[in-house]
Length: 192
Length: 426
Ligand SMILES: Cc1ncc(COP(=O)(O)O)c(C=O)c1O
Image (tube, rainbow over all chains, first blue to last red):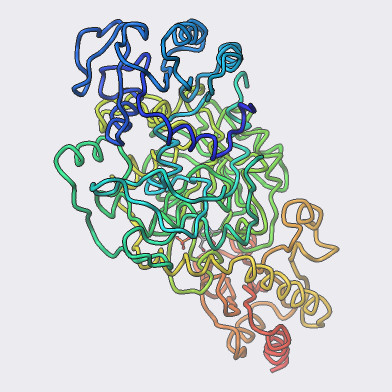
C-alpha cells in the first residue's frame, strides 16, 4: 500500500463498509478537531464509540465512553487513532487482541507511524494514515465542496442525498479522480 | 491502479460541478438566495460552529460560488478556493488573515496600478506597511525582508508592461524567510502558468479578466496552495491560535492544508463582507469552461499583433515577452511556454499626441480601462488612468506619454491589425 497516495476507491470502500468506529483519543472539548470528527461521523450514520481513559464513564453526544479498546463490549469495524504517532503500535496491538478483529486502522490527519501500519497490514488489516475520515467523507460525498475545497473528484452523475436531512450527501457517488494537489502533498511529507 | 488525473480542459469544464442532486439540472444552477434553511437547531449549531459542511448565508458561502471556488482551485492545483466580489477584495481578504498593524508586506514594484494604490493608501490605513522590491533584481526582495515581514506579493505576468517575474526565485526567498508567497495570476491564468508549482503558497485572481473572459462580471478568487505550515511559523494568529470568534477553534489544526481558505472565508469574508453575487459566479463559470481555447487564441493573436507592430515605422518599441528579442523572453519560455498572455504595451514615436490620436481613431478596439475581454481593448494610460501623476511618476509606472496598452481579443487577427493600421495612418 502506497501510504502517500490512496486511491479514492480504497478510501470510499473503507468508509462504505465500516459501520462501527471506535475513536481512540477523542476529546470532550467541543472546539477540538476530534470532537468535530466524532460528531460529524455520528451524524452521517456511523455507530461511534468514544475511547479515552480521561473521560471514562461519561457520555459523549449520548455515546458511552470507554477507557480502552478492550473494554468495548461490541464488535468494532474501524479504529480511528487520534493519538500521537508514538502510541500507534500499542493501539494496533490492542486492536489485534479483539475478537472479532477490526478490519481497518485509521490514523488521523498529521499522524503517521509506518511500523504500526506494517504490523496491522501483516495481520490482514487495512490501514489509512495522515487523513481525516470527516474530510474524506466530505470530499467523496462532495459535501466539503460547499466550503470551496478541491474534492479532487469529477462526476457527470447526479450526487446522492443522504437520508432525509438538508445538506447531507451520501458516499455512493460515482466519480473519477479530478486533479492533483501535488504541492500540498509534498509540503505535508513528515520531517520537512 | 492509481487514479487517473484529468487534463486541464476537462477540469475547466467539470471541476466542482455535478448534476443537481434533486432536479438533475446539468448546468450549475444560480442559487440566487440570501439564506439556507436549517433542519433543526442542532444542524444550525453545527454549521455555525464549523462542525459540519454546508451553507448558511450567502455572505459566507453559496453553492454556485462554491462550484467556482473548486473549479479555480482545481485548475491551479490548490487545496481550496474562496470567491469574493473583486480582485481587490481578494487581496484585502488575504492580507486581513496575515497582517496585524505594524507588519510589513514585501511587494514587487511592477504591479497593476490599482494594486499599488491599494497597498500604498488603503493598506497604510490599516497600519500595514508595504516595502517595494524590484522584480528585475531578485536581490531586492531578499533585502526588503525584515522580522516584521508577513508575506511577499508578486504578479506572474505584471500588468501592464508584460513583465514576467521569476516566481521560483522569489519563492525561495519567501521560504527561507518563513513567509507565504502570494502570486496574482490574473494575466497568465492557470492555463499559462500555475504558480503553486513554482513555490507560491496562495494565488489570487481578478476573475473580471481572462477567467470570466467576457467583460461582463467583476469577481475575485483566492486559492490556498495548501503548502504553508502555519503552525510551525507561529506568527499567524488567525491560523495557529484559538479563535475567540469560534469558541477557541484553531483553524490550522482543524482544517489542515485548506485552513487558509477557511480563514479567508470565516474570519475575513464573513466579517469584512465583500461577497460575490451568485449570478456573477455563474457567468464567470461559463467563461471558464472555454478558458483553454480562449487563452490560446488570445496569446496567438497577441503575438501576431506584437510582431506586426515591431515593424511599423510609427512604433518606437514593443514590450511583449513572447517576442524573441524581449528582455523577459527567457522567463516567458520557462513560466508561460504556451504564450505570453494578451496584455502588453508599446511606445509611439509621436509621443503623447500620437497616443491620444490612436485611441480616438480606432474603430474595432474599445477605448476603456479593462483587460481580458473577448473584445480587443486599448488605453493610453498617460491621458487616462495615470493622468494625475507627474511625468516622472508616469515613466516610473511604465505609463510614459508615449505608452499605449493593448488587451488583444479573440477577433480575427487580420481585423485587429487592420484597425491598428488605419488608426496609426489616420
Ligand atoms: C493584475 C490585476 N490584479 C488585480 C486587479 C483588480 O481586480 P478587480 O478589478 O477585479 O478588483 C486587476 C484589475 O485590473 C489586475 O489587472
